[in-house]
Image (tube, rainbow over all chains, first blue to last red):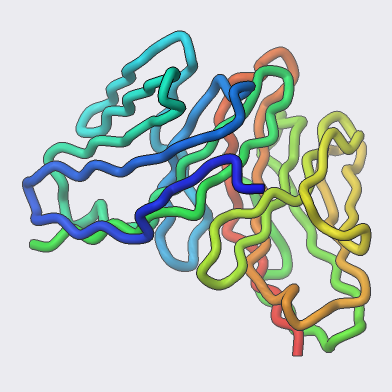
Length: 112
Length: 115
C-alpha cells in the first residue's frame, strides 16, 4: 500500500537550471510533508518541510509547494548545482501519528 | 552533539539465522523509527517506538520485531532470515513528545546481507 508516490525514478537537469521533483499522496490524513536527500552510503538528511496549513515554504534555493486538493507536492531547486545530485525522498505524516511514510525516491543528476 | 548511531555497519547472516540491529537516538529524542531500504526500492516503514512503546508497525511479518529501552535506544530483531531480507536498515529518531510536527534524523544504516 504505497501511500506516498514518486513516479519519476530519475531526473537529469543542467547546472543552473530549475529541478522540479514531484510527489503524490493518497492518505487524506497526512498533514505534514517533508523532503529528504540521500547520498550513497549515508542516511537520508532532512531538507525542507511543509505543513498542510501552508501551500509554500521556501529555504534558500529550495521551495516546496503543496496542493492539498490534488494531494500533490513538489520540490523546486533553483539554481541546481552539481552537489545537489542525490536521491530525493518525499515523506508524509499525520498529526499524532508521526511515523513518516516515504516515496520510492527520485534520483536527481545535475550536469555541469 | 552526536547524531543517530547504528551498529553494526555491516552484518552477514545465513538464511534461517537471527539478526539484531541496534540504534542510539539523538540525545533527548524519544521516538525511534525503523525503515528497510531494499535494492532499488524506497524506504519501507517497519516500526515506530516512542517512550518505550510500539506505536505503529508497517506491513511486515511478525518475525520483524523490536523494542525500545528506557534510555530510548532501540533494537530491531529479524528472525528466521530470508534472502529477501537483505537490505539497508535505517533508524531515525525525532523529538515527538509535545512536538508531533518534527523532522526525523537518520543514522547511516546497517547493511544486512543474508546468504
